[in-house]
Length: 248
Ligand code: PEP
Picture 1 (spheres, rainbow, N blue to C red):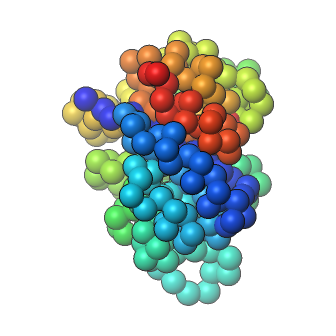
Picture 2: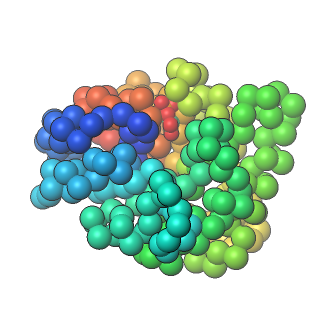
């Protein structure tokens, strides 16, 4: 049985003080949550968030991690820096990193290996753009993202994949539950081919893209969908909790 995982991606939102206030609002609302609850938040919020989540079920995540241990990499944050604060999860290869900051499947692969070598749990994002979808290239794109992104990675037991169709991120457009399930099923089949049936069966794959309280139940009911990566709706305690508590 795969335990559902709902992760918020705050992106570049919330100062440290705002983060503390949001977490304090969120804590009682997710106190009885059944899924695993993670908040992936800006680096500058991590320290205060670590104190604020104390005694709650909320786990801490970052939005990226450097591929090197340390050194001349201005602006990067290392796995050791994240570990020391108590970070457990890291998002890797979000489409906004790919779109605006030159992230590629190769750099995703390097960051993924670094995260795993340092016992951070990666949430690896994959997904096609609208143009790729319209040209019927979804499977081809996902195959490359998975094969290159995971090259040389043997153990997926701590890995989560987030399937995020880029056209559904922050647009209010959600993939239909059936569509998302089918595509996630395809990603699972890629994993099965490389890693075998047992690994494919136990790997958690989230859906991401305009997920909200009103569509969470339908999406989460699908066979292949094991959770959500939540952008906009993670910025309001009530909305995020509404997704976490999708079963009511
Ligand atoms: C995201 O950025 O990962 C995301 C899914 O955003 P949104 O929920 O706002 O579409």
